[in-house]
Every structure is written in structure tokens, then in C-alpha cells.
Image (cartoon, rainbow over all chains, first blue to last red; front, side, top):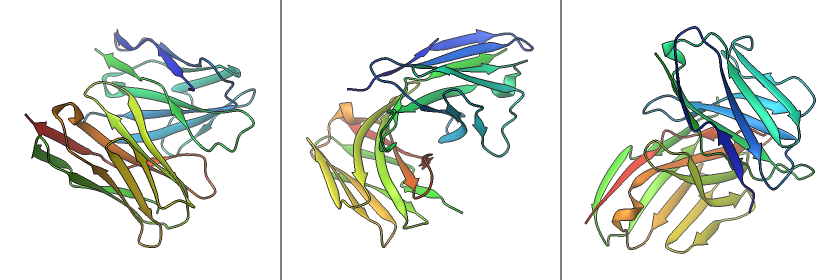
Length: 117
Length: 112
């Protein structure tokens, strides 16, 4: 089956530092990857859509200069939280769709828990 | 506005009971709908995917139904077990978009 991994699974950082989260499709190529965020006791909210070789599309209210997304290959997308603050503490989950398909199903990664002190 | 709502927000049942989780959505023009399970502090596990053209999907003790006209989906869990305790999320992909809109989830606790 299609497997998506994320690294790291959890990270703690100091306020003001930047954190990079990786999302990889392990056994398939993904033209499109999605980044979601989940605050405590809330549901997942889409942050941005990442397309290989082009700029990401951000949802309304998400700061593109703060959440940098790079999708340099068909198996890797990265999310960098720049100058992180405590309010950025959240659970970040990525998903990927099969290249060449109808984007019929998204395969979700295990998530990365970010805690900003 | 396209929204997804799940009721109840929390549910506690004794082991062995059959139960139904509800998901409603505001726009009947959907591409597909997925049910996920999320354990505390963990990622998502996909349980069932129902295409727009389908009425239901089954996997083991799980059965998900879809009624687009009424904007509803249900997840039926038969013979519940303590290991079923988790948060269950419903996510809808509306027509014309690739993204999923998630409900707020139902926190299920099955008591031994």
C-alpha cells in the first residue's frame, strides 16, 4: 500500500528558531502533497497544497512567508516553520496523492508534533 | 460555505455494543468521503473511503454509508471492543477541489 512518512515525529524548539518537517512518499510518486495542521482538541485544517516543481498554494489566513513549503521532487515535500512562536505549537500532518491518478485518495503521514517553548 | 459536522462529539459505550457515528456535510456535490481513526497523539489511519457513486463500504466490523442527497454519512461499528477507543474523523472532498474538509471528530471510549 501507499506509505507516507514524516520526519521528525516530534520536535521541541525555542521561540524564534526555524524548524523543518519532511514529508516523503515511500513507495509511490506524488505530484501533489498537502499540509494540514491540528491544534489541540480541534480537527485538521488544510494549510497549503504543495505541487512538485511549482509554488505552493496557501489557504486563506496562512502566512506563506512563515510556513515555507518546498516540493523539490516527486517523493519529498518540506514545511519550514520560520521564527517559530508558542502559538505555532501544533500537530502537522501531510498527505500525498498518487501521480497520474485522479487524486482519488490521499495517503496521510503519521504527523509531526511541534512544541515551541 | 462547505462544512463537515460530526455528532456526537464524544461517546462512551460498554464493550460489545453496536454503535453509529454520524457525519453531515453542507454540500451534496462531493467527490468522496473518508473515515479515519486517530489515536491520542498519533496520526491518521484511513478506515473506509466511499466514492460519490457508492452507497456504502465495509471492512471487517466497520460499515460506512453515504447519502449525498441528505448530506450524511454514518460509520457503524459492530461488537465494539476496548481497542476501538479512539477519535473518529470524517473528511469530505467536495467536487472541484482536491482538499479534504475534516469534521471535528467523535471521541469514542469503549469500556471493558
